[in-house]
Image (cartoon, rainbow, N blue to C red; front, side, top):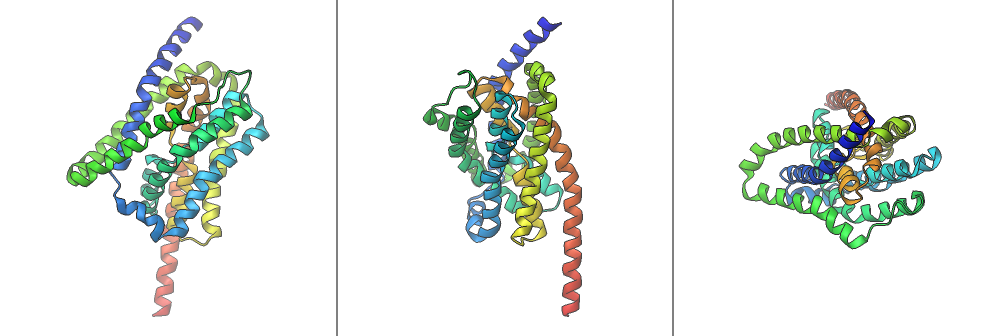
Length: 309
């Protein structure tokens, strides 16, 4: 049985290394097909909300992961995998949760697009810093920055631009294709998760306690960070809910592409695989909470407007 699982794990790791990058490209094409250049301009039009969302995602999320890794002191491959996960942008998943919560979807799309561009440059730096800090016995080697930038850009930035070009040239097709593409990607991601569990089953079994506690803490703390920052700076409730999802929901496809394809280390995906089990539950719970918060805020605004009249 053990030999069978090892053989399946090797095959699954190979398939993941070949399949995950294309799943990620489809995810980014789908995001690009929902974007126009006007979405990027919102960063200038609404600088306060965009700045808070970007700060939470690009600084708060990796910093939280780093502090947790230092506090929990897990095995190096879990610590590095956690940093890789936190370094990734939110991606298209956060858009779906913001839409379901009736939050500020345009802000969410804008933040997802901008972070997808910026993290092309920040991810190599954070990965190498994590490898230097947590790497063990020379097994985890620093990545060359130039080729890493090119690789990540080919996974994220280039498909994003392709999607935007499709949207600009054939908006009707883009609208029709957006939803089928999103559903197709969800099925492919489910397959990737299954293959990831098979390829990393031994590490998952051995470290589910430590890694599970880490990803639960990361998910809850970063969602709380996003909401807390938005409230601290007195943003409207819809924007607060959006930023909660942007900071607390990560692009799992990109983290898997880095682990399986670029680093060729399935064990680094343990944190991401457990996060994939935890994050949907907390995100869906906050969808319900966010809806109630937004509805309560709208009722207050209506009462205030009636009082003024």
